[in-house]
Length: 358
Image (cartoon, rainbow, N blue to C red; front, side):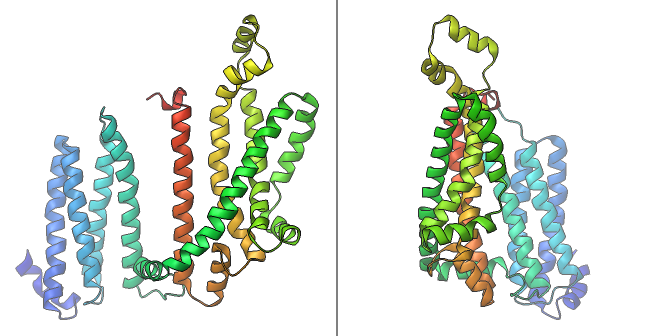
């Protein structure tokens, strides 16, 4: 295959013989192994197929990215990209089709599948931006963003500490805690349940860009004003979900508690709060993302010279888009880990729920 395709590859690579051999070797080996993987797929050896496809896909991606330093991408190069991408897709497909009764293998697959898919999105992003010479001002490559991330670690940490550790976490705790306590009060008063919940739904629809400037005028330019925005954004989702969860007990369960002569507080702690836990954790997960969004947006309307929102708005004006993407990466990573932590707590405390029984 290589002797026949050599002159064509030499032309596509602009006369770079070593680059041509690398390119044709990558494409040829990927095609051969793709056929092998497909045969293994038919026989049902999905794990072997996934490993083979994944290894070759990663190797092909590394070769293709390194070739960008030596050649001008042409049709032969993009054929290699398609072949490597197809192998990556096949790897994810084979992993997703594995049905195992092993708990650790299921956990490992739930981790590997989105990780592999995300890595290949970054690879396509890198090859696309560099291969098509996309201006860095419009869309920087992941490698440029990574370089900026590493070189600006100190600045990113200060911004993270100001926005997440202060405004987000404090506002999240206050908003969710207040929403939960008010829900307990409303639960004891039908009047408040009918009168306050519609107002809560109205307030929860207020745009954060309208609330943030008011909070800045009330609480100043530092993090308390951003925490106040987070409190407003997280209070009502927790309130509504908790009130709904406290009403989730069936009539049969309520009557059973009455036959045991249980009082309000006994019914609350033994029956109604456990039944409300799935609703409460839904609110906590929703608020974990709302809190970060609210704090970052609030920093656009007045803040000290630190903070994720401040840095994003400032660096956009300076056309330092790679720094903007580095801040976005920090925010996305922090939000994902925060959400995952809440989801882990949900699994611990609501293991009895039907959604976790399997």
